[in-house]
Amino acid sequence: MAAKIKRSTRSAVRKPKYQQIAAELREGVLRGDYRDLDQFPTESVLCERYGVSRYTVREALRSLQLEGLIERTRGSGTTIQPATARGGSLYQLSSVREILQYARDTKSAFTPLGMTELPKDIAANVGAPSEERWFHFRGLRTRPGQPEPIALTDAYIHPDFQSVVEKIKPNGLAIFSQLEKLARVKMTHVTQNIKAVAVSNQVAAELGIPRKTPCLHILRCYMGANDRLFEISSSYHPADRFVYSMHIDLEK
Image: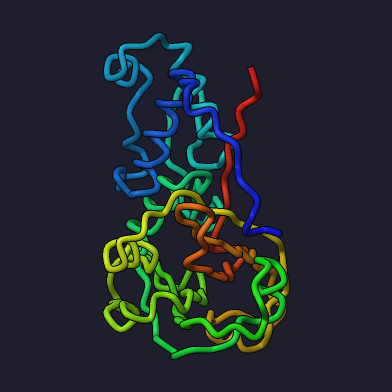
């Protein structure tokens, strides 16, 4: 069952320096720190900033280039790739910290829809009774400066949280962040399933895309202590507005 899958981590192993640099630069690009596409720091500036060799800097930049975030041209330096050239918005969502960053960098407007039974496919995926009724929120997620929505999300909150559901602000922080504060629950890990789908007419209409447009469907389960599942989100991301990026380190 997807909700029971845990991702192993090697937190005790420190990432190589070039990966640390790449992660910091990646976050800056996705935040929009470099408004002028041709104002990305030079290799010399980066070497001085991080106190590393030119080889280390080049390895970090090579990672960003492979992700489509930057373009490097001999004699012309490094430039940021516009969103249209990298498939809309690229997000690194391989840890809880990065999911939190994604939630901060984007904006959502949810509508509370009361209690509803979990859709059968979601219930089967997470191992929950299909007749169980959860609190349902639905809304679009957008990114500053990008008028088209990057996702349509259905969020389901476990019925145990009835006492705080009415306090959730539809235009506030991400729902899981609000639940942490309101219900004093601590998110410890997240599981997610990702697959390509052709969306329904209803989803296409809400996203403003042609029907059967290819989308990424991300089913995410937010877990607390003792594998307590407190929120499920089901999101549809149009293929031309969202790119999912993941880094996998080889076992040493």
